[in-house]
Each structure stands twice: as structure tokens, then as C-alpha cells.
Image (cartoon, rainbow, N blue to C red; front, side, top):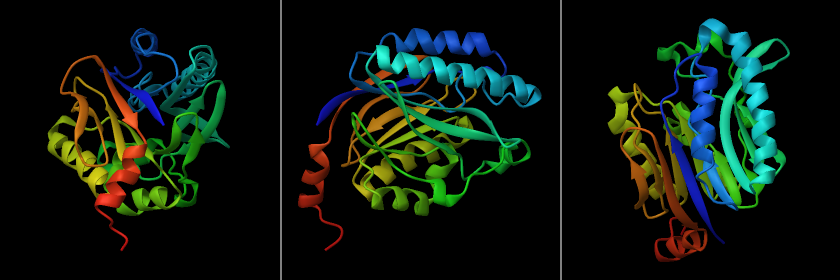
Length: 245
């Protein structure tokens, strides 16, 4: 299977809901049908901790609208946002596949130095899972979770083909982000698509193939990054460089 993958890279201003969402929609309209679109972490709200209830409501609105857009535009969309469940607020990743919500799970590894632990509840390790979509088996990983081998390993063992990584990875740790995205692709012989915020964040969003080759990337600024994903490459890499023998 071959398909186009897109990353929407832009700066999310905390609590500038309408402005952030307008940017997202402008970039989304540049993506062709029957493709995968990965959006940075909490892209429409930023880490709006001072207005968490409003962030929950706005995220809910955006989730519903993007669910509808995914059907009308024949897209598979990966996005995270604030979600309230049983009185607790989570940073939840959603996968919308052409009009269907096929996955929803909270962030498991919160970034404590950034204060996430004070504002979000963590999900359980058992909630980490892959999902079958129109563009193959997706394995969502949320930002800081990229550092944890056991999460990536679990997703590969479940059959993950394309690892999608919405993030707001800090500029001071840009080298870590760039190294980990490529290293995980090489280590696990899978596609990795990293959608990072720009501005105060590191940017450097990229699409990496199972050889660790960067198909497409953008260092800074606002951009739509595009690349072709050919899932048959996974088997080719595994045949040429078997790691389980």
C-alpha cells in the first residue's frame, strides 16, 4: 500500500483557540484526499493550563468537526487535545479515519518538567494500542512517550506499521528529538512521522522511513510537510536486515 502522508507544523499559542484552529484548517486544506495527516500535540489549545475547562470544550468541538472533515475530505487524521473523563483531564490522542473515530487513548508518560503532571492525569500502559485504518496500522505515540522503549516495543508487537508522533518538543532538546525519531525508525524498522510545534518548540517535523532515511522535513516555521509512504518497504527492510533471527 502506498499513500501520501502530511505533517502540519505550526506554532500553537496557549489559549489562542480560534487563531490556532484557523491555522490548522488552512494547512489541512492543502492536503490531498486519501492521505494521512498528523497534527502537533494539543495544537488548537496549546498547553492552556489557566483555562483548562475552556480548552476541554474547544477540543471537544474540534474533535467533532475534524471527525466530519475526515469523512468529507477522505483523510485519516491524528490529533491530540484536552479531554475530560470522569472528572479527570487527559491529553488524549484521537485517530479519525474517514468519518470514524477508530482510536482514543490518553497520554501515558507525562512530561513532568513541563508541569503536565499537575494538570493532566496519566493513562494506563494497557491503553497503549495500534489501530487498523485506511492507510495501514497506525501506532500513535504522544511526544515524551517517544523516549520509552517499552511503549514503542508494545506497539510494534501489536503490528504497528506507521508510528505517528504528535509533539510539542522543546527547542533546547531539538537534538534529542531529531536523533530519537530516526533511531526509533532504524531500531524498529518502521515508518515514523513526527509532527512537532514550531516557534518556542523545536520544529524539525519529519517523515522517516524504516531505513532511517528522512523522506521530508522542515526545521522551523509554519509548513505542510509531504511524503509518500510505501508500506511494502517494511518487509523489504526486514528481509535485507532481519533482526529476529
